[in-house]
Image (cartoon, rainbow, N blue to C red; front, side):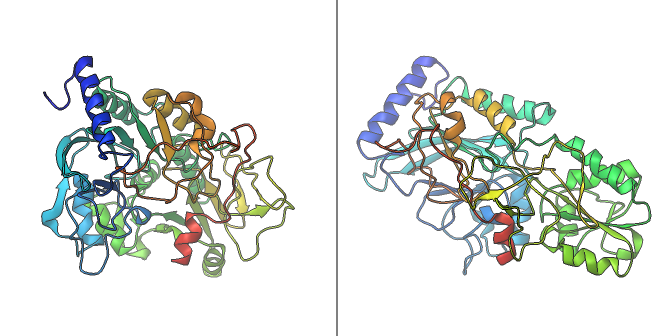
Length: 445
């Protein structure tokens, strides 16, 4: 029998095969050591990297280099990997282009029985080279989004949606591992092109100022290119490692836009962690300077009494989460409002590379999984996606438990989490606020 026939009868046969294997101890409910996504501690037979941001690559830089097994990633990520992790054995890389599929022949560690899986790469549109992974076969059907953003009116997002639906071929996703970074109705960001134009307007309004823009080591290249085109500014400063990444991405091959010479331009893109109130104060003692932070991450924490948390200085306020217990964080920034000067010389705008709530809801309507599990458990405003989306899941069973790990999954092990007797229902549950964020973690590192 073909592994993944396109007919409904074939799909039902394949699903029966998955149930049989699980009864024998193979598959999501029982078996370990098959497939891992964004988790590189060893012990699996195949590994998948969604993209090259630091919080998804832990374990790749271990002493001795990567030797644990085949590592699947996008061609763009494969091109960048040696610059970030020179110890990775290139012979283990398995580049998988968006829309392409690969067949995996695995073996159950507990029974020795063969396990067949087909994985398809889907564009995630989070940063260059970012992918989702759709797994179908003896493990059932599972979709791991990694970090992603499919804007509702974006042509690339529509193409990615078509690629996903074509790959599913009418099948149902048993388990959806969802980017729940901004899984709260208050978190609604404008499309990136709109925010990019707001940033251009801020720069235009400060013709005599130096401009400092905080960016990641990968991502927001489209924003910088838009600034260059809109302002007809041929030169933007970036740090040397960032310039190397830009060239490896095939951007600005003629070296006409980006430079490492500060004297050639007033616009500089700097590592996000280095853009602080203190650094802007220091720069303003030399010449007038403004800072721009394009991110959905809130940068100023306030407690419910309205007092800023001690030791935290940052350019922006964030979103209000109402109905919180005493002492919880209160946030009062409306991301849909025009950009504001939150601190002296600093602006923060919601140019987000993660899906906002409306986009997550639309994605759930597209996929309609049997169950959904959030991949982020250390978000600044964590909400289990089932709190809002259980009605869009086939099993319609709510769980208040958070994932055990914040990033990276051993997809052959995780199963839908059932609500135990006496646990809180979605109506009773209050939003859990975590004091801290990925920004805080980055700063500590």
